[in-house]
Image (cartoon, rainbow, N blue to C red; front, side, top):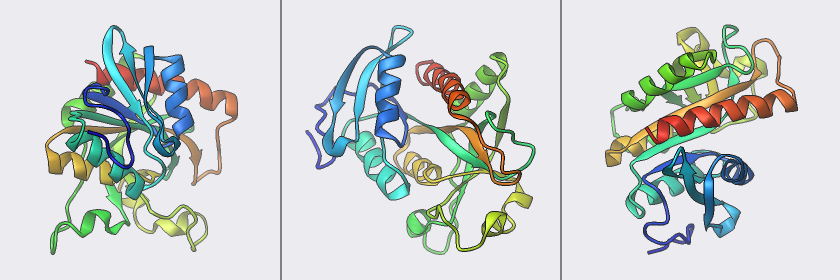
Length: 237
């Protein structure tokens, strides 16, 4: 069975998948990390591949930017293709000076300004969180590799360009332990909880919104290599 967004056949995906937003990053992961990588989806150029890592089968599927786009792919990967472990990989902005560029953020929880989570729970405010086993494994493996890692609350925002300048757009969130900002994790964690699967977000902080420091192209590529290898290790454990 295929979908309007995915031409993969049953069995084309492994049970574990990495989820970058950028289709070209999915292609880069497949070409530089996976053994025997095979293209399994190219609808709308949202590329998906399956190959091997350390002899174990694993997939990578682009989701596009933002929670609405990710929600389509994640819903179908779980309910149509039977995936069980979903790890978002990407970059994020830093909301606290203690998080330096090239540092890793593991999203223990995901705060959001989006109604994509709120609308499903009536009067309740659901708290989207990572799978603990994946989170613990990622933290332990990152520390063993000597990577600088932070575990904390991530903001999944629907807004990239805030009306308020600089840090003003984030209000009291940084003072309440929200250390990074991206655009997908809250929806990923909510869908994982809804359908009983495991999910985690692993991000490299590339632009600090507090200090204005950002990462250059060469350092960004090196940092992403370390992050992807870590995510693959966790995915196939």
